[in-house]
Image 1 (spheres, one colour):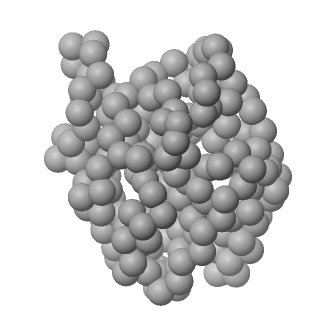
Image 2 (tube, helix red, strand yellow):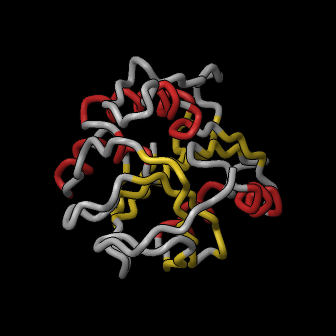
Length: 204
């Protein structure tokens, strides 16, 4: 899939902007403590991310939920509401299968109730004491409704790339919403980097 450039919109950076990350280093450190760790990446496919984790001895599974379902959400070519019932989510893995799950920003495209259903599906396949990482866009101003691919540059940097797909942004997540979403996890840590995207890392 080719990428496009978009004009600068307040609240979102140009395509290919590199931002610092605090949560990724913790996620990698903890998830790779498992023997032959299995990682589930639910974001847009990135070969460099797969190579990054493979180099660390991980086996990576990718389920590009948003990109795979964009046609189902926009059958007429117009942006429509996303329903978790319409989303094709293949979580046919055994219970407690993955050592780590990366959600990136997929929850931004669901309301809180739907996001909770999605999280519950993912939590089932996450090992006890496994880790998960998620990103949330700034609540104000509301970013343009685009899909973003995240490329890991290093343990401290992630490149945010815009894709030529738009979709309905369903929910602006405030701190209380994020805490409620992950309240069933045993630990919860939140970071706010300079770009104001909320980073969350949790442990089952």
